[in-house]
Image (spheres, rainbow, N blue to C red):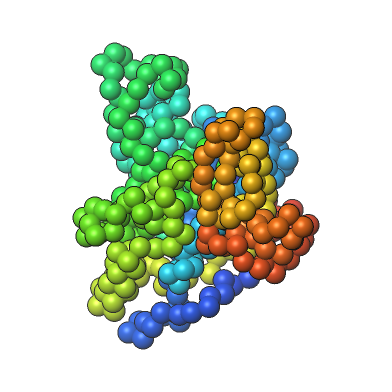
Length: 384
């Protein structure tokens, strides 16, 4: 049990897990560490609106279960995409704000909310960094902090009128800062290894935002920008920051990201770059490897309904081009990729799922064997 010197209480989930296995390794003979693969230890914060979205009317352990059942597949998916670079994710904890007061502890949201559903991204990042830096001894050892929110991330308000944080962004406007707010090259810095991402409507849109945010923290440039000009953002690789359903998608890393990854790995031999990623904390971590993929939870029809309020129109080639109806009879449609782990192939096939945008045979544990953190919840008390 950690002791934290504040009046409020946050919920902290910690779970034992088996060692993360990898299929390949990176040669780092110049370091004394026994690790051959960069392992990013992530501490995840859930803001109040995100907690309420998933908890609904439930409270206590039932509410925690709702959060757990969504975010363990979420982080499993993030790890799945980073494994393509031989980088792995280790989830060191999930801290949930169950009230606005608890959220204010780490986001200083009373000051940083421009509207009821919008944050000033820069100020919030600064205050989050101060909180993480001042609370290091009371938090699980981690490399980066990711805050998940429902709120719009604004650079600043467009309005000149006085701030009214009770109004909705719908009645106001701001310079939107995208779905990710973070620092480039912030990893291994206590106050800068932080990011805020949006994950809305319980449909896993934030998975790619989390991948992009972590990539930025690692030093990967956004496709199409400095040091990655030849990799166009419109191509839809992981560092394109594309999350819109009908945007081009590729379930892989661009050549620019791979080149930067290799460059940074070479520098590890002669500098402290990424050094924290090879220093395993040996503390407990959440085992998301037993969790299902998002597509095992959210059916193709349900996924389409969250976007258009109508079912999927067909089930052919859904991994790369799921067709969702914009009307009752599929007269108008939008197309985009199904989420990772979605069923694909013929309707009577139960052994094929979407993996990296392709329909492949899938042999894994049954869905009902999922029991990743049952009965292993701790409360992190904040004392006066």
